[in-house]
Structures are given as C-alpha cells and as structure tokens.
Image (tube, one colour):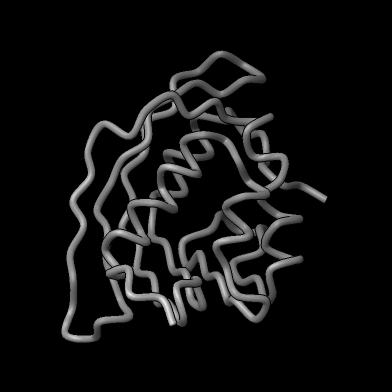
Length: 140
C-alpha cells in the first residue's frame, strides 16, 4: 500500500516527464493503465490501454519536443484521495524545426497503490500542430 498523496505522485510524474525519462514515467503506471488525450489532433490516437502501449507512444517524445521547463504548476486534491488534478504548462523547443513549444495542460490522474491507472490530459491541438508546423508526433 502506498501512502504518498495523489498530489505528490502527480508532481513526481511531472518531474520524471521533465527529466525526459519516458521509461521511468511509464513505470509509474499500472500494467492496465488507460491514458486518454481527448483533444488529440485528428488522425492521432487518443486512447492508449496498457503500460506497453503507452510507453510505445511516449518513448520518442523527447526526440520531437525538448521540454526545458514547467513554468506553471498548480496541483489540486479532490474528494477522492486517489485522484489529483494539475493545471500546468510546458516550455521548450520543437527539435525538428526549432519552433518554440509553449503548451498549457489540464491533467486528471487516478492512482491505485501508488501507480497511475487513468491519465486524462487536455491541451490545444491547434497550438500543438502549429508548433510542429504540420508535422505529426507519433505518426505511424
């Protein structure tokens, strides 16, 4: 049993993301994790089931976008001790074209025994596609 508050677990996951440790980040997830990106750009997968599928999606992310900092971060606890919400932003550079990458997120995370079981993240797909200048992250 993990007694770390969900808010701290969420902060830890963002620290791991900022460190560009996608393998480490995926290991913060349960084997049966479900990750949802409801605002994913058209033609992009918006739901991933299982740690392996989520890692396959995320593993190359640092090769596309160099996130240098998380300038804003507000983490909220909820009535459910296993759920935390974060409003945060990422600042960095798109590696392929040198464009600035500035994105705001709203992330809802549910934990079980200290591991992420549901990760749902909202962000602006138009800003994402503009930063990539029509490129597609995680294109098949």
